[in-house]
Image 1 (cartoon, protein in one colour):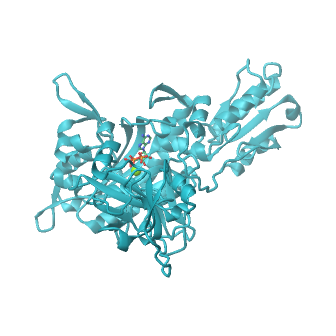
Image 2 (cartoon, helix red, strand yellow):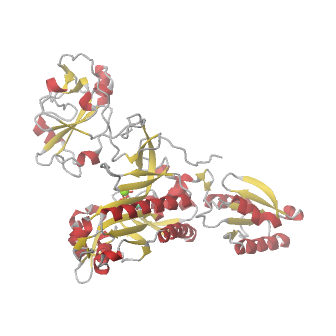
Image 3 (tube, protein in one colour):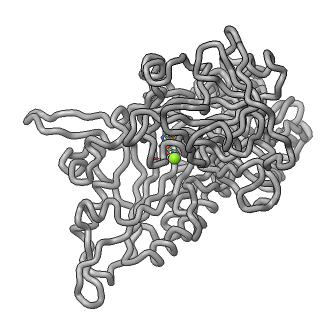
Length: 570
Ligand code: ATP
Ligand code: MG
């Protein structure tokens, strides 16, 4: 049997729906039922797991000094207008509604506005700070692509926490405390995970850190070095320039006919050059100018987030359509290049070090070879606009980067005064002056975590719950209890004893189900410890014990079963 305890892999393509094992297993094991796209009912067994995850989160948040509260799910539009997000928030995600008086509301996708409103009313003096509030609650986001079941649902359970501070150093302290707290939470759940920086990371420490559970089926790609000193979401991982080939003689610029040749693969095949010696030119909407050309090495891919963050480029990034391109440049995509291009050009650092490269000639069915930047192209800006690839130098100078897939289960963020300023959340400082509070926010995908645990803990037969969040710890399967009073009584006694000893135990006393089917169900549901009670074993005072994680079976004396299970509980 294959155990899928996670090992790092570097696959790059986004997983297909069918590859999300957790969703299929959650449905088959009866943990959830689908109501509509992105909406799921947590069935009794699933809810037990969800509640355990919630409790681990709650215990660790409480231990850190955070205070739990519960805010309304429905939020008035006024608060969102105050913060400026009623229009600006990723509009598709925000589910808006009206009440009977025609007043606007939304179903909360997050609660910065509500908590800032609480804070400005409740917190008056610097002496009350810092404060960390949190809640565990249902959110709604009208996701463009709800998929993978509860992994990316529209309605989901989040732990969202918010902190308030008099200054940046106090915020940093709480941010560090939350970082520790998150590590404890994910360790207790039993995840193989990494914390990665999620922002572009200006010098002086990260202001945003994501926590990713490593899994082949993850939607996110994270870049890390083997020294363990650098890890970042690919969205923000810095791509350094590849080394320039200095002592290479510049070749002559030549225009060559390339009929029907458009993609990088076609270009490199037709002209017999490596794709890394070609460049591709993408046309996007500019900020200030209508269009901007983005130039990348042929074998590299555009990082839309980094590009969108550049001042000269519209954010979020928007590609020009074919008609706009033909109007502005005079040729179709596939033949564009930076030589004598009439729109501003932004070149990726690695493309900027190329010598004698190949690019489109801004004329359909023609390319240039032997192109050199300074000699052949006009003004250009150089910027980091590509995704890192395995083997790139680590931005911190220590070794090279590799990629792994991850599932984002948490995100901690230094918000600064974005919300408190817009919503006038101030306290009085020592001198009696009103100071705008600094804020941090801290999210955990509680329901997503249940699916993430399954992604890391399953085999061909089903789920393998860690003891920490298993819906039940032990399942007892009596063999032919209806024929053997002895088996029935021993099973019932064991059931009572185990529960009394603190093991949440399930007694599978279904009469119409054959033992084989019960074994299969127990494996599918993933109960960590299984006890089979049969007449033959009882004659010797023994029962059969199986540890789900490695499917090892042993005969254990009845009076030793509790200590046996304890010794095998993780
Ligand atoms: P993602 O990048 O996955 O879309 P996000 O960055 O929008 O998530 P946050 O606003 O930081 O998410 O929310 C905090 C946490 O809530 C995330 O780290 C994630 O674990 C969880 N989460 C976010 N969106 C969903 C969803 N649609 N379904 C389930 N969990 C979610
Ligand atoms: Mg995120």
